Length: 306
Ligand code: 3PG
Image 1 (cartoon, rainbow, N blue to C red):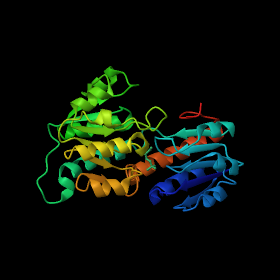
Image 2: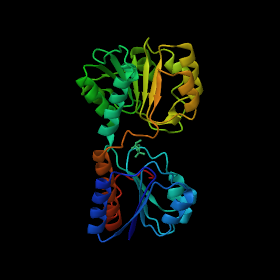
Image 3: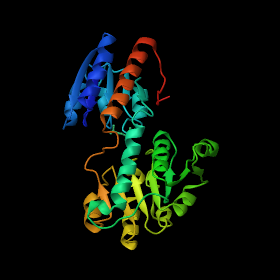
């Protein structure tokens, strides 16, 4: 059996070593395709792979067509919007993710970006502090929970809204659960996004929702760029000089944002939320273990194309 790691944005070496250990202990072979620049390289590498470990790498029908021996794809991470699930099912390929494995890393980055923004991007002028400010966590999954934990350490007042998480679960963590996104955005000066990119959430963070945020608003996006209605956000930022946007996923309109909103907009050049040795080890080794469990015992825990 051949397990391929196909990562445009590579794991830390220590994580690749850990994955190799798991794969070879199972008697399988490990192949590595990192930092590829052309889809053709991916199409070639998947030809004889029985299993693939990916990150945000795109697995579409063309890749699945080329991967004639493929049985399983594991997205080492949470969001699997980069995999065509229907095509995978049609190709009889199991798709899994590794929920929770990189969530602390993403949460730490979200808080780091908040500090960076309120300190005026370290430009030497007086900024503000997080302590005592209201933080709204939009979606209370693994990352949202970790953001709440770290934010409480900063002394923030933490609120959350999650359409799928019972309020009691949120309130057990000492977080105030609200009934709607509208309420959350009205109540909180700081919003941290943790919603996945789905048909329902795409473009859902729009002008109408954002316009009600209190003065000195800061939107932090470590989720997905697709959830933002970029035109609506740009319009709002033109109208409100107090509104800041920091993101770990570069907007399609990055050049426009950087030019028009200099001093209150920041994007990482490449998604960095899960880019820590710890998160790479956790998610990468979990992916390797899930592959071995699936190929040896048929274990389908964490399968997402049910
Ligand atoms: C995830 O969905 O797990 C995060 O967005 C991290 O993605 P990455 O592995 O591409 O950095």
